[in-house]
Amino acid sequence: MSSSSSSEEFQTIFDTAIACVQMAEQTYNVVCNNAAASSQQRTRIYIYRNREEANQRLVQDYFAENATYQGYYFRRRFRMLKGLFERIVEDVTRECSFFQQCYDARGTSGFTPLQKCTTALRQLAYGIPPVALDRSFRMFARIAQDSLHFFCKTVIQFYGPKYLRKPTRNDILQLQAHHASVHGFPGMLGSLDCLHWAWENCPTAYDGCITRYVDLACFFGSPGSINDINVLNRSPIFNNIYDGSAPDSSFQVRGTPYKYGYYLVDGIYPEYVVFVKSFLAPHGSRRKKFKRAQERVRKDVERAFGALKKRWFILKKPTAYLGEEKLQEIMYTCIILHNMIIEDEGRTICAFEVYKQESRDRLH
Image 1 (cartoon, helix red, strand yellow):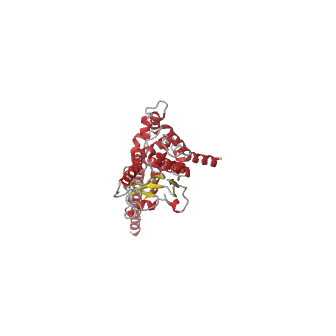
Image 2 (image 1 turned 120 degrees about the vertical axis):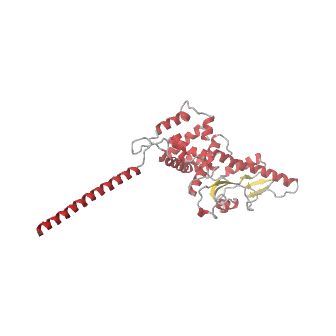
Image 3 (image 1 turned 90 degrees about the horizontal axis):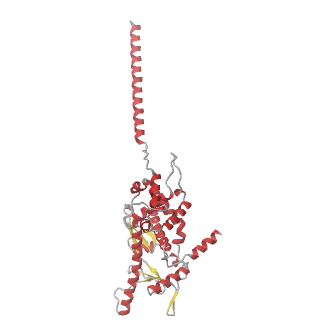
């Protein structure tokens, strides 16, 4: 009896072990199937956007020999002439490897330099978000955003030394001669004012020290308060005058020598020797005439900022980009391209022969 009972107990234990093993196998299979299903769900879906067709359509519309849109339409949509844009694309592609066409892991050819530069320019000119370029350029948002980022960096690095350089003595003489002949202000270097660019996603930690604006003081971008004086304190425009390294801007009026040229400003700026304000309550015909002339000339800088915002619509609407560095890069890029367009169309005041000669000397 004892042997039979022990055998029955052993059989029961064995059957229980077999059942546990089977349950463990079933549980393992269920877990593996769920993991495989979840991994398949997390796998990135590849969308064939047919970027080659988008590039062919772009070339046929604007860059072919018999392009669909030429002359006026190209100038209106690209904000510049075709020759200037092609030169920018060539320089940017040579200086930055991001714009050079390559192949991805699937062996598919990447976006062409024309596509990347055009998407960057469209974002600057129209202020559209990167995600909106997928339909027209077959480019997803990350590549469009990277195109704008590298485009701004390359333009500043390559063209900045020429179009954002400090004025030389020759430039100062040309500016003073121009303003004296056109506006009747001898020794004048220009007008000083600020352009406010709203920052939509400004961090709340910046409230109080930096308001939700990015200011541009006399074509020099700097993050700061909405107050013009605070912008002036943050801007490096007059640092060379403080340390004595500024180029000679002296002039004479009726035999009286003056050491520095001057800028026309409004009443909010401090009392500096290089600032010329209008009279608040002028008495006499001479003071009234000077007030009218000073305010009339100061409209030039307002028109310049208006033209800059109209040409690059990204500056007209609140920006959604994060980081002060990116905002400054976009602002500097718009200024450089604006100066390049003016030079290409023959509307500059100061020539760049000195810069070209210095560049040739460095090359040789």
